[in-house]
Length: 153
Image (spheres, rainbow, N blue to C red):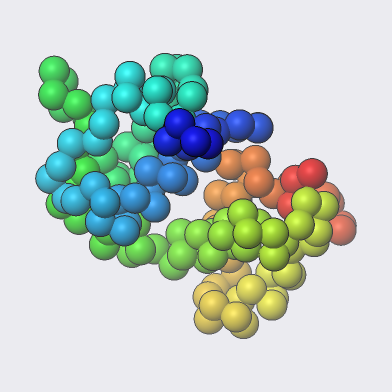
């Protein structure tokens, strides 16, 4: 990527965009009260279609990390970093997401059981299930009845 672009490729590109922007918000690259780059700039930076950018931004808006201000753009909320880490299921899902991204949990690999996740994170069964449901909704994990959950191949 010698041209400075951070191309996104593969399956469900809009969730990859949401992940990258979320990471930038939490890291403080986009501070609370600042505007995100325009859809056109995001399309250019990541090599994606405008509709893909909109879908990724919609995820962040649903999470409460950004708000859309007509004729202005998308603004990072004042409590974005705190709100992102406010829910334990999001922290668990984020940790598992990073393990998948870094190859610690390879494609086709079984995720740890609900019981082991409960013990590792000190969380309730419902909290762990909510985290796993989030990853399933993002298409990173697939559940097989009676066998467990696996990283999507």
